[in-house]
Structure formats: structure tokens, C-alpha cells
Length: 494
Ligand code: NAD
Image: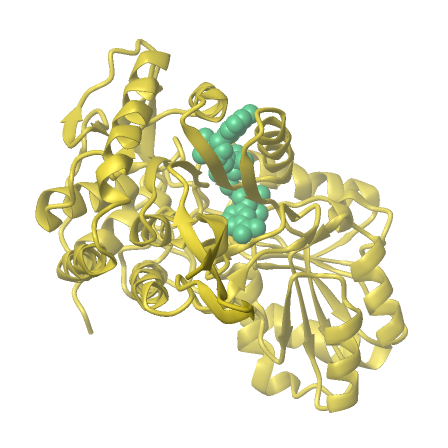
């Protein structure tokens, strides 16, 4: 078994990377960032001032002039170094994610893998998708060519739940294509992101300004979007903020892509191999303590018989899920990210019970031996949920499964398509290829899973959602090749 790396007990006030130099913020607005497994502060996050954000953008703008002109081979070499640097700090990065976010060390290692995969895929695009097209002799003596050009500075705004993977859905792609970025991690758990960028900056020799990093929240984001030098913004976070960022970007004439929240249904047909797939279902709902945009949120047994067979097995497996401190290798579910999240999730459960849902498993008040102040919840299951309840409509973003039975597959698809405005993921468990095909075609969600509980696209596929789970046209990961470049057409006669 791999041994988790040692972590610091306190990371102090988080710095910002501006023009190749790590510096503190002059801001008086500062908040603590925690180890949610122990419920103790492990650092502080300043909220950058307007001047600091503008200095970062100016630096990225200046860096762009040179960076966009160096050869693609040179840029790729930097990305190979980036990959090597991240690999050499693999365990340390994983441990910091667990410490600052709370997820298990196994989940954190998975996240670091995903982060590095995005660097690898970004490298591959430099030699493939970044190429333009040429057609000779479109008329006598005339050839036409289209080239993809970098645009300039991009703002990259990321959420708390994947502090390493989500920034890397964007940063390596922008950088290899010749753009420069100002990255703003979540103020909730900025330590892993800041640490990764520090390793890259100090050990890969990346020129100053290609990647800048600022700390903060709303004001920082608004300053970035309003700044003329910023050509576009990528956002991942909750739907209300995604919508706001998208609108703001539109107002300022910027290109934007904004991934929002989710309310994902996991549908189980009567012919599903329940015994084989219960672990995948449990992991979908309770892995990462339910804090994944691709987490199951509503469990949908089709028919009373399936309901009867499924619930006992699902609840038993959920009850066996080992909740604990994420650094303990045996832990299967860590805490949720903040005390406020824990209280909000407990409030949703309370309201659900008041609305008439039946508690099958109650994870509130879950204690973990040795960690009395951690923000722990156990897997929670509410049965007899109806489509009109808030439990069925609102994103909870915690380890809570709401069970809604439907009569048939059409009813389940109708539930997915009508009960919420989210459309991030929908999964079906079945042995019937025809049902799987119908589901994949009719469920109005951006990511469809068949016989798996987390339909996460690999880095060389796009990552987006539908309806209120996504605002924009081009998605994250591979689609950013077009998002981060502009097409120019050259028609020449010789
Ligand atoms: P959040 O919306 O609270 O914050 C996301 C980012 O926006 C942070 O960097 C934050 O500082 C910034 N921000 C917050 N308020 C802002 C405002 N008013 N204006 C501008 N910027 C603002 O999200 P979170 O709690 O960090 O992350 C959880 C959410 O992210 C969930 O809803 C989850 O579903 C979603 N998420 C979606 C995807 C996806 O691909 N669809 C992936 C991961 C997470």
C-alpha cells in the first residue's frame, strides 16, 4: 500500500503568483481555510485587491506577446516538464487535497491522475487538433487556409470540490495553445491548487506571466471579467454563479464557458444485475462525500419489485461504507468540506423529513473516533420522496440519496427531464441494450452512464452538461482547443 505523504500542520497565509514572483496580498480581507477532517484551520486566504488582480492580468498580457510567438515545440517541452513536476510531487499533492478538502487519500490520488492526464492530452492536441486546414486551388491559382491562433489572457475560475483536476481541464490547454492565464482557485480550499502552481513555476522554468494565480472570490472574478485584456473566462461551480459569470462575460463581450451544478438520477431497471452493481451505485452517491458534480443524488428504482430488492442492499452497502479521516488509508468517505456545508446538508435532510420522506439511513450526527471536530456525515438515504419535494429538485452536494420509484423507463426519463432544470449526468443500470439505447437518446443530460455510477469523460472527450448545468457552447477538456483559439482564414493567389 502506498504511504500518504507527510503534510504541514499549517500553510500560513496563501500567496499569489504575479509575474513569476510569489507575494502576499495587501488586502485586509482574509478568511481561514480548514482541514475539514479535523475541523481546524490550516491556513488563511486573502481576497486580492483590484490592483493586485490588475497586476496579474497585465503580467499575463505582457507574457502573451512572447509566449504566443514561440514555437509549438518549445511550448510542448514546457508541458512535458509540467507533467514531470506534477508526477514528482504526486503523493504530496494528493495528501494536500485530502487535508484541505477532506476526500479520501485514494480519491485524491485519482484526482492527481486526472490532473496529469489533462496535461498529457493537452500535449497531444498541440500536434493534432491545434492544426488548421488548407485547401489548394479553390479557384485558379488560389489556395485557402484556416489557422487557429491563440487569443490572449484567459481567466480560469474553479470550485472547491476538485482543486487540482478542474483547473487542469483548462490551464494546460490554454498554455500549450499559446494563451496565458490568470487562475483563481476556490477560496474554500486553495492550498492544493496554489501548491501545484508553485511546483510548476519553480521547477518547470515556465516564463513569468504565462500562469498567474490570484486568491479571492466574487470581486476578483468581476474585476477579471471586466478587464479589457481578458479575452475569455472559464468557470466551474454552482449554477447561480455560473449563470452570473456567463451573463457578465456576455455583457463585456467575452467568450465564456460555465459549468454549473447538478442533480443526477441513477435509474435501476428490473433486469439490472443489482448485486454486481450496488457498489458502483453506493460509490456514486457517497464517494467524495457526495461532493461531485457527477454524484448520484436521486436513486430511481423502476417498479415496486426493483424497489423492494434494491433498497435493502443499497442501504446495507451504504451502512458498511467506512467514514473517517481521509488520510487513513482504510477510509471510504471523508468529511464534507466546511461546517457550513455540513449544517446546510443536515438542514436539507431535516426539511425532507418534514416534507414526508422516510429516513432509511440517517448520517446526521456521525462521529468519527479521534476526530471530534471534523465535519462528518454518514451516508443518508431518504425513501418515498416525491417529485414535488425540494429533496427531488435541489442540489444537495452531500452524501444524501433520495429514492423516487417510477413505474417504467419512460417515467424515469420523464423524471430526469422534468423534475429539475439540471442536466449534468444520468445513469441507467440494465441488462437490456434497447433500454440502454433509449435512455442514452432520451435522457436530457450531458453525461450518460450505462451500468456505471459516475459517467466521467476522459480528458480527450468534452466535459459539459445540458440545461442549467452548463452555459456556453464549447465544453471543458478537449473542447477548449477551440475555446482557447480563434480561426483566421488566409486566401492567397500565387
Ligand atoms: P461556487 O459557485 O460557490 O464557487 C465557484 C467559484 O466561483 C469559486 O472560485 C468562487 O470563489 C467563485 N464565486 C463565488 N461566488 C461568486 C460570485 N458571486 N461571482 C463570481 N464568482 C463567484 O461553487 P463551489 O461551492 O466552489 O463548488 C460546488 C459547485 O460546483 C456545485 O454546484 C457543483 O455541482 C459544481 N461543479 C460543477 C462541475 C461541472 O463540471 N458541472 C464540476 C465541479 C463542480
